[in-house]
Each structure stands twice: as structure tokens, then as C-alpha cells.
Image 1 (cartoon, helix red, strand yellow):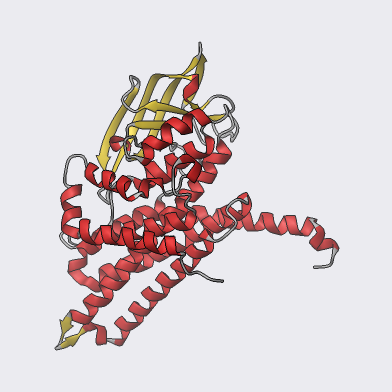
Image 2: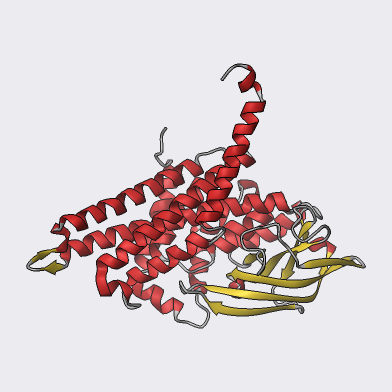
Length: 393
């Protein structure tokens, strides 16, 4: 199989690489995360000028018509720079929801403003009790006149403090853990009834707890069909999971390369510690983990993502495997750097923190291992009950 990038993807990679190298060095990034806002709006404007905010949207919607591979290209380079601007939550998560579920009037009015950088949307889906189960929704939406009144609580909404609008998953019917009965509502994030409690996460990004009290939303702000949003939510979260894996692969490369360089330069007893055979074995194991992670990421972006069961399987396989790699490579990078690996002043600890967060985002290793096994079992059962059994295979 040919894994070479197209000419357009190579140009995209070079453009993002140049941005990270020239405008997002370590000192610049550290200055950004120490501000009260935790991001730099001027960078968002630059993303718009470079066309990055239009990557996942179709050409009919004014975007670049990018695939999962195009998003991978961007996110891998963002991972190398630890870019804190909310590209993943705003563009690849909330933006994809609007693209897939929005009416023509909604997409015509919303997506151009997203691509231009004028508007930033985020998706509030997780709740304290839900863990990684997207269908576990207690936030309620009750019909009132021509609209709905929402009440509930959403946890760890990344980028909410940077957003202009929010998409809220609320239950319009069914039991708390039913996949049916979930509806999406769009609201201005400064609306009466929305209260944000914003805080820095361990990896220096910004997230918010969102308290929703008697929030009134008109019917024209419903995204998609009433009660029928779960399947698309799962699909968009899966695509965002691939993007998170892409960012993690970029982080793994930095951890691997930085540790290798350090072991070549750090001397002990008159020679570089990289001359030690035991350390060489560690570095080789780190390289293998990185190469396997990149390979399984490529397998995910080139799979048939329009097939729900195939999508679930490849996404969970990649997330579980890359989550294991993050732990191994990160811990070895910290240990081989010695005391330097632990201090905030040195960048290696920050890459490990972000990698650890990505390992949990959208489901940890255990969650995705179980999901992968369930998908594999469903494929086996479908095969055994289908024409394969009758033909003797």
C-alpha cells in the first residue's frame, strides 16, 4: 500500500511545520500558556489566513475538503509544538458536528464564520457520571412553547473559555443511558443560563465545567433530528479520536528524538550515556513503540471510516495501542533524562503531561481495548452467520 502523501498534503505538512518552527517555539508557547486566557487569538487569525480552519469542511461549504489523513497531517505537527489553540475541540469536533448535522441554513451561516476565525464552537457532551460512555446523558431539554429549556452539568469542556458558541448534548426522551433520545442544541456561550468554571489542566490547556440552568434555546438552534443524535456523535468523536492519536504520535516523536539526542550529549564517567548498552536497548524500544504507533495510525486513517463497525474497530485499536506507547515512551524519556526530566523548566515533562492527557481523552486504554474486542467479536459472529459459514470457510 502506498502511504506517500499527495502533493497537497505535503504542502499542508510543510506549512504547519513552518508555523510551529517559526511562530511556536518553546519560549513562545510557554509565554502563551502563562497568560490568563491560555491561548493567543492572533494565532487563530493566522490559522484562518493559512486555510487551516477549513481543512475538514467540504468544498461546497467553503472548506478544503480534507480527509482524516489531512487532519492527521495538521494534528501531528501541532503535537510536536504542543499547540494550545483549540483546533481539535473547535474545528475537528464541534465543526464536524455542524458539517454533518446542520441544515443548509445552519451550515451556510455558521461554517463560513468558523473558517474565517470569527466564530469558535465547542461541544459539551461529557458529564461527571458518564465516564467515556457518550450515551450517558442526564442534562435535560424540556419542550416549552416554540423552544426548549435546558438544565444540567457538563464536565471538562476543552476550549469553552475561548469559544463564542457551545453545542450541548441533552436528553429529550428516554432513560439516562439510552442511546435514543439525545438531541444537540446550539447556544451563544454568553447566554443567560450558561455559567463557566474555567481552570488550567495538568498539561496547561484550558477546560471548563459548564453549569446549565434554565437555558432557553429556540427550535431553529437544534442541530440535526430530535432524539437521533447519538450515532453522529459517536462518529464525530471517533474522528476526533484519530486526530488525538495523530497529535500523540507527534509528541512521541519529540520524546523519542529529544531523549536520543540527550543520551548522545550527556556524559558520565567520561563518555556519553548513550554508549551504555542497556540505554541503547531502551532507546531502540522507544523507537519501536513510536514506529508501531505511526503504523497503526496510518491503518486507521486509511480504513473505511464510513463503515461504523470497521471505524469503531480501527479507532479503538489505534487509541489503545498509542495509549500504551505514550506510557512507555514518556516514562522512559523522563527516566533517561534523570532529574532534568522532572522539572517544569525543561520541555520533556510537558510533552509527557500532554501525551498522558491524550491517552485518556475520548477513552483510556482499557476502554478502547474492550471496545476493540467487542467489535472483533461482532465481526466474527457476523461472518459465522453469513455466507462464509455456508461456503465452508
